[in-house]
Image: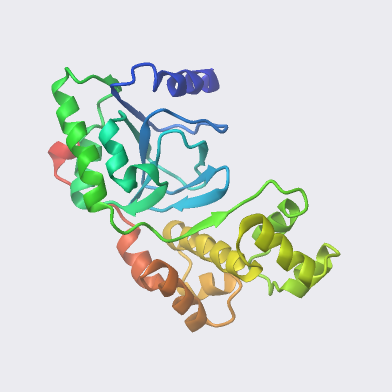
Length: 277
């Protein structure tokens, strides 16, 4: 019953092209690849999620939102607890082509203003038409996104359906805490270092070591936001023998030290009662 309801909602999003569609939900839903004719803003309140497209994996942490352009096939997996998943599907407009923001999948920090606006829609549901006074509010939200979203979270993980590389990626994900090298991973799959290097480069346009670093940082983001592990523990659990090396790598990719990211992004901000209602 729940899956059929989810499917109905996903199909309903595009029924009225000129509307903005609102969908807030609390329970877990199972998705397959799907796409919309509308740009999608998703905010995970009190948790985190992964978004999968055909060629990349994105980690959506707390205090960030995901923008999925119209026409991009995707699905979400919520691996961490969440209070609500808040989705706003914005109408398409010919002027969207004038700003590259609307055509790029990305993860962006949520400002207090944007968060207040998202939560202000908490009791809205379904299609909001241009004749509805609420539509003006949503149009203003959409138009402000490019201006307040200049700094996307610079981390995503390429993926592939290549039959030789898929099990390698799965093995890496399952053993991130280990001392993984080209030699050790190649040996496990009876592949030479040269062959494994070529597979990564030719299939995903990324090196083995770049992939490993990104996979470890995405895992670290999850630990920082959703566990009580110390930075030292997270460094060890993501395959780093040196906390300073882990911290420096994290800083280069995220722009913050792990401890700063953990303390500043773990909690939602306090909001006025009239916004929460």
